[in-house]
Length: 96
Image 1 (cartoon, rainbow, N blue to C red):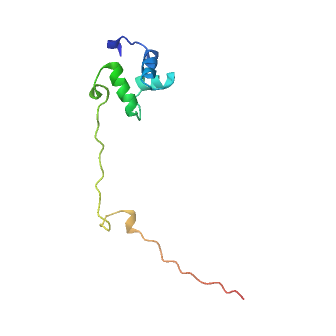
Image 2 (tube, rainbow, N blue to C red):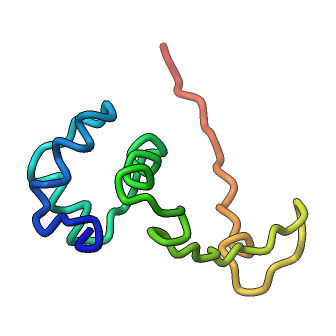
Image 3 (tube, rainbow, N blue to C red):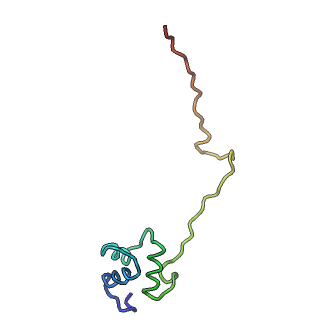
């Protein structure tokens, strides 16, 4: 932002509004200062346009660790699947 002459988060708000992104002052502050949990593509593209940069300059991609998928009925050791509920015995009521 500083290389573009923006030294305050409030400088960014009207530029985002010009591109159709309506964010409150606190949302813009959190977007700049903190690490956002989620970011819309429209906001990302607007930021790239405002700052004249690429996505790689703003975001560092991190791969998530994927869990291995197991086939149905696969034998797992020490899992909840080893414990089965006891069979219930249903007794009818004697209505007279």
